[in-house]
Image (tube, rainbow, N blue to C red):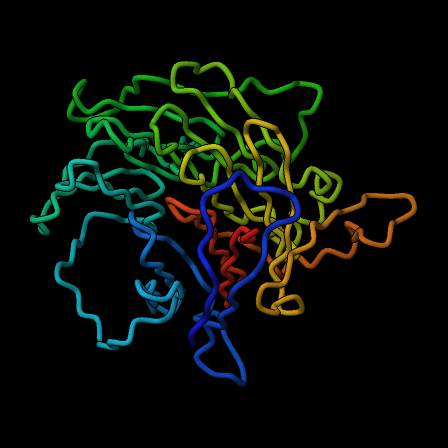
Length: 362
């Protein structure tokens, strides 16, 4: 399971220069795969020398970058992982987020109704810093969907909700952050209100920029960039797959409308990336507003092959290089992506397959 490819200097993404140096199947068996093989997370470490993936079966695979030759390969040392610490009995519901603080001493964990603060050295107790559980569960109107610490200010964190809102909290204000410092929400256009409005406005991911000046949120159809100094509306909005708006009814029936797409920044915060269906993923340049749709597929997995931009047509005559929205495969979805912190190298998880792309070396 070794793969190679040169690592280029960081450049602004272009529409014709991405290529694929590697494709990896995470199946336990070459004959078949099951739900346990589905990749549930992918992330580079702070230096970009390590890339880790986790799957629904509880397996973690770490890839290491060679120093002498620019390749990524699975670490040679294969050992059985045993937990150094177990932080237990603090959550009643499924944990949706874990975020390490910039002080490197604490971290937060979030579920649907609560956010807890932990010390990395203390496993038997945590501090509840957010609790939105009502006295009567019938009065519950929203749940927590994601949470993250600020990259530089150890007292600040944000959490998003199923109502499409984001709350920024400062732990210096109160031990229990039941009152937020800032509240970010985009007013809804009454003319576009529909049965699906609340579902598609639910935020599935929130990420601070590396600079800490902005944060990015992903809902079902779009990615929004917020300035922390402006709560009333996002400063940038990018449509990921607006062509699916006419398909919301069928997406609701097959439960795809509840898929949780993540998003990520590149190193200098000049571009963002998120996934879509049919193994498509989208990249947006913030300065030029240029965007590109690429596909992670085995058919184009030849080393150093140039990836061709893909286009989706919604009606009328379809061009040769376009794909009809009716032909999209909703079982193929890219929920998890990661961008190298220093270079234009990205990792894309497509069900049980991991793809590594990089900007072409001129």
